[in-house]
Image (cartoon, rainbow, N blue to C red; front, side, top):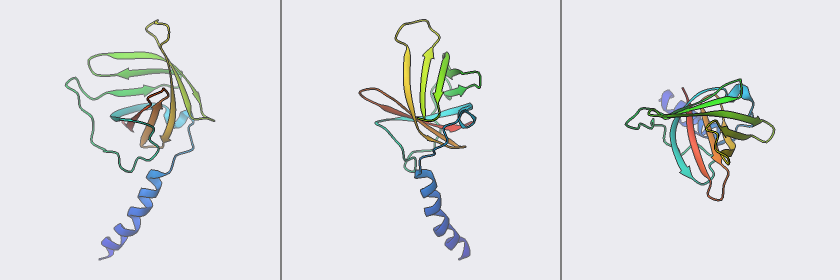
Length: 136
């Protein structure tokens, strides 16, 4: 009975914490490896309804790595892209530059959720998509 009461009390608190936008967009929170879970059309700020099952492709699990040096690696399993990024922690914005040398390969993302376990970035465009990650 005590376990049931504890579960009832903790569940709303946990849901409230997960739905709250994390305001700390510092590099210390961002740096490291992030496992890609899924992408969604539109701008997401609430992660309560998101699936937590790992995304699997036939080549493996995609992993995004943000390094303290300002570089990133997007490993898709069968190929990877590399580049540099600038983090504006006051506005929770990321600016990414791909290393492939093509002009126009700069992308802008807003961090709409970031904590020790989860990351949601939204590609800023006319048709935004949200990318959901969990820490590796």
